[in-house]
Length: 548
Image (cartoon, rainbow, N blue to C red; front, side, top):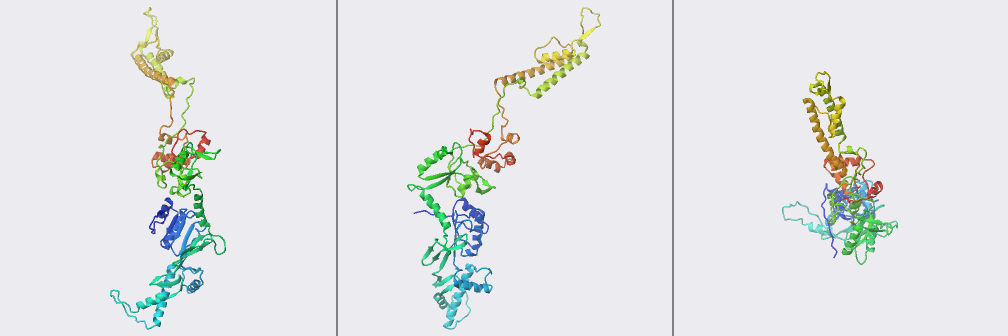
C-alpha cells in the first residue's frame, strides 16, 4: 500500500505568508485549502507573491465562493486550481431568482449575478421553512404560545412542521432540495478549474453517484486539458525513463574540475562526483539524468530572501531537480532550505595569491641588508662626527704639538686633525681599518670612542644580514592575515559569484569582513567571477580547491 504523507497547518489572519513559504521550502506541490473565503484569498495572494502560482503547483479549494474571487492575476500562470460551486449561475431558474434579487437591490454586487454560498443557503432554508409553514397551515390552525428553553415542554406542532419540511422537494438557488431526517440529500456540486478564459466546469459531484470528471472539451469545443496534461506528462516522462522498475531522478550539477567535468567530444559527464553518483545509483537502483545548472551558480539567496535562491539550491527548492551532485559547501543558510548528505571533504576559507618572484642581485644589492633610512642615518653620523672631531681638536690645546721636537724653542705648532684627516679617521674606523691619526685630548678621545662603539654595532648587524641575503632568498609575503588584505587597495580580491564564500562575507558581522565585503561590492570591474572567468581572465590553474 502506498503511504500518503500529509502536512496540516492551521491558518489565522497573520500567518498566511509563513505557511506558504513553509510549503515551498518543503517542496510540496499538491495543496488543499480548507478555510474561510477571506483566508483562502489571502493564501492565494501570498502564493502569488512567492512565485507559487505556476503549472508545478496544484491547489484544491473547498470554499464554495470561488466565483466571488478576483482571479485575474492567477489565470494566466498555468496554475492547476480546482474548486467547487453549489450555485449554478447558468441554470435558468437560478438566473431568474438572481435577476429578481438584483432588481430589488438584494445582491451586494449590482453588476454581476453572483451570490455567496452562505447567503444562497440561507435563502433556500427560509424558503423551505415558509413552504413547510404553508403546508402546516393548510391542514389546520397553527397554535402559537411562548416556550421556555429551561423546560422540557415542546411545541406540539413542531414534529408536524418537521415532517412537512422533509416532504418538500423542489429547486432552490443551491440546486435540488431534498431532506431526509432533516439532512440534505441528493445535492450536486460543480467541479471548476481555472483556465485563461476563467473558471470552467470540468465535472460534477453528486451525493448519490459520486464524482464525474470530463476534461476533454469545453463549451466552445476547444480542448481545455492543458493543466492536467502538464501534470500527466511529467509523470509519464519519468515513467518512460524507468528501466526494470527503477525510479528516475533529475540531477543538477556545475562544471567544476575535477569533480564534475563535461566532455564535449563524448557528450558525457566525468569526474570524482560523477563516478560516485554512478556507484550510488547502482547501489540504490535508480536511473538519472544530469543537466548543468542554468545560471552557472552554486546557490545564494536573492536580495537576502532566504526562500528565493539562485543556482543549484534554487532548482532543488523549486522542484526543478531532485538531487544536486557537485562540490557544494554545507553552511547554515543552505541547511535551512535543503538537506545535505555527509560531507566527503572538509575545507576552510583560504586566500590564494601569487608569491613575489625573487630578483637577481643588482649592482647595489650589498645595500639591501640595511634600509635606506639606516644608510642615511649612518652617513649623517659620519659627517657629524668628522666635523665634531675637527672643531674639538681646534679648541683643545692638547691637540696642538711641536712638529720639530729637536727645536725646543720653536713657536710653530701643528694640529693633526685637519678637515681631511678628520674625515679619514672616521671612515677608517667605520671600515674597521684604523688610521695613523690618534686623538690626544680627552674630548676628542670621547668622541672617537663613541664612534668606535657605534661602528661596532653597525658593522656587526650589517655583516649578519648580508650573509643571510647572500645565502637564503627571503620569502616576503605582502599579505599575512585578512586584516592585511583589508587594509590595502593595491591588490584586488574577490570570490566566486553565488558561492558560500560570498555568502560568508555578505552575512558576516565582523568589522574586517564587512569592510572587505564593501570593497568587493564597490570594485569595478566586478571581482565576483564564475569558474570560467577565473581561467579566462587570469590564465591560471586552480591548485587549491576552495569551498563554494
